Length: 251
Length: 213
Image (cartoon, rainbow over all chains, first blue to last red; front, top):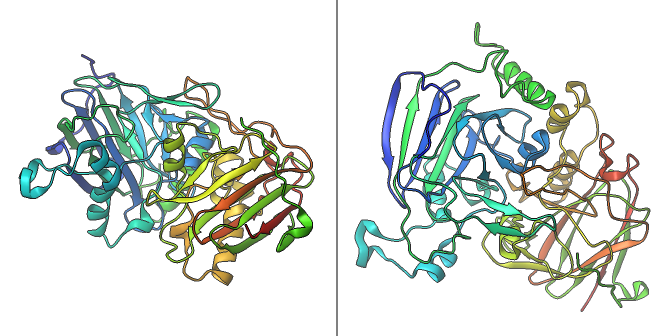
């Protein structure tokens, strides 16, 4: 069991359970916090991020990794858009590694591994896959398959060797492991609580994940994510420019 | 790393063209055709994307490609997988040994983040991609510019989760060759980046050849 590394601040605005197999989305306003908690262990929550005001600006995996010279996400990291700005920041997490490079499963991969698991047979316990979940959720915003980019997999670790070969780390996330994001612009967050395609288990059993949306303030000038590296200082400076027209909103 | 030379004869290529440094290039490959990219002067990053020619909303997927081969580097034998899980091309020869697909393309805005806010004026791959698709591939837009391949570029990742741009492994005349498994559009930006070692601080031309199989 892990304990939070930061004091939980802010008023709880939404608290709900993301069931196994479920997708979810919301616009997290600048400064708001979104906390995800793995309730049973072995969770895998795939995520996409867009500028809510202009979704053509979206999460960019290579720019996120290059700016901070990282291959995974952990506390202190910024999640960058393709326009040099920060969509959100990882302000706390208990795992130290969230996957960015191994994508998600589609219906073909899911059926090969778990079988059909149709609605006709299983009703709402049916087997769902990440890609179809993304398509449904993105469709609600007029977005589609061209808008699905390399996604983040929270709670997942796929470790690289020196020769570049990759290994899925089983049992990486335990019960009560968590990650907490702070939106650094108004960010459309799209989530899918569906198994990672490299998880060797052939049993479809994604655990419930607790979601908590809390009020909060935008990054201040002494913010640890902003000051992680000169690159992040410049990224946050570009965010500041985005909000300059809103009096008093520039930090 | 899987080095393999090709027996294909340049004089028999149906297409043979130099792409100058900082220039974009697009071409449709028919199923079965073989594309070779030659790093003419060495250490030149060639940012490349592929699309299903009959439906470009299906496109190269770095994450699917990485996951399906359980390795972050591309070399001989790598299967380049689409966003719909289909095979686009297979790398059939490679005299460099390692190509990147996590480093992405440079852009005016990411150059500001990585180097300095005043670097926005510098030429970059995304501008090349955008101009090429606006002029020649009207079905595509910025939505379709996703995580690409950087042929001849070396971006190591460590077991503790670090990543950086390293000096290239390439040298003058090294090449990579791939065979199309469906009709595909090739979109290339011959990288103009001057701020890091991906082009040895001196962007140079590459040669593109196409053979019928």
